[in-house]
Length: 96
Image (tube, rainbow, N blue to C red; front, side):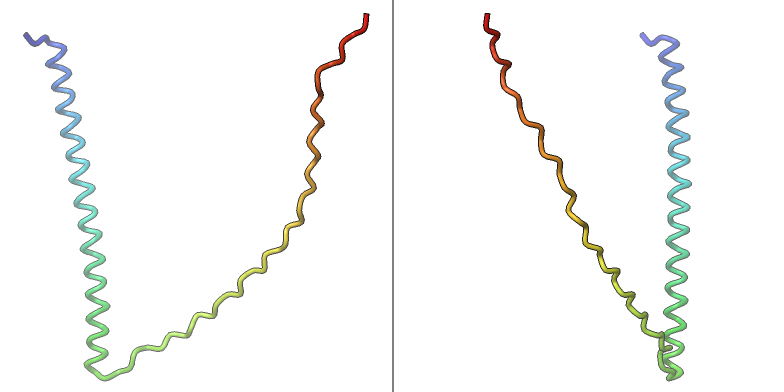
C-alpha cells in the first residue's frame, strides 16, 4: 500500500526529471546549432576557394611565421643540502 508521502516524492521526482530532460534538449539544440554554424562557415570557405580556383587565381600567399627563438634555460645552481642531523644513540647508563 502506497502512502501519501511516497506519492508526493514520486511527483517531485517526475517533475525534476522533466526539468532535466528539458535542459538536456536545450543543450542538444544549442550544440547542433553551433555545429551547423561551423559547417556553414566551412562550406563558405570552400565555396570561396573553389570560386578562386575556377577563376584561375593563385592562392593568397601568407607570410611564413617566424619561429620565435626558444628562451635559453638558465642553469640552476645546485642548492647545498644541509647535512642530516646525527642520530643519537641511547643515553649512557648512569653509574651509581
